[in-house]
Image 1 (cartoon, rainbow, N blue to C red):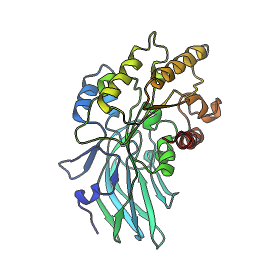
Image 2 (spheres, rainbow, N blue to C red; image 1 turned 120 degrees about the vertical axis):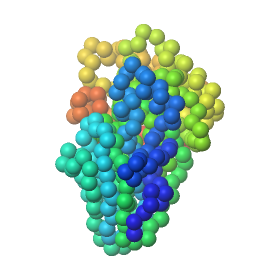
Image 3 (tube, rainbow, N blue to C red; image 1 turned 90 degrees about the vertical axis):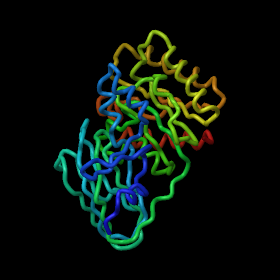
Length: 316
């Protein structure tokens, strides 16, 4: 059975909006046009390229199929992570971006029987999809609360070099949120993208950033961001995750800790905001990081699971 792009949308999660390209691919976006215009005109040129990435975008369904396939095309690559198939919560097939052509078809074969499938698209690349084929009936996955997840490169998914092993993916295998991931490499607390998105209203918001500006002389950008957040989303429950430990700035430990303390104080002033101390989520050891800044697979696994524990403990 060949799915139309409209049918494909029913199993495609993590997108705010869809467009069909001239050659029939489905392209998805996690930002609205106003936000992307801001990135396009920003002096930080790489924000715009990264705003297209298929971060935390998945194809999710229940089926008895034994074979699925789809056409794909890359239009941008950052780090080369993976396209992965999970069957009933376990990794089944991994395609490394560095090992597959720029355009082609990916096929997956599975054992008979009903199963839940998740296909993780690359977190730090932009992958277009078309011609999804499946040899049995299917039902789209049933998701929980609608959650807007905002952050920097760690939230986008750089570090593990596995799309299924970003901390967002790890956490969401346990939480099953209907997520929109607005993590973007190099991002900071910036009120200019805290604007209403037409047709989108999250049930909850998770914010995890700040590490790219911990040396700032003032906390004005953070203060303005949370005030804008209040104006746009009112009393919507928010989870603020302060920056993680990082080991790449020797001699700056006190500056980082002071910044993190200030983020927690600013966010914690709002009654709808729950604060999680990022220093408690990943061990302060280089073995858990790709580069002493971005958690690797092991660090992301702990980050995701510890964050879920914190969310459940807080009743968020």
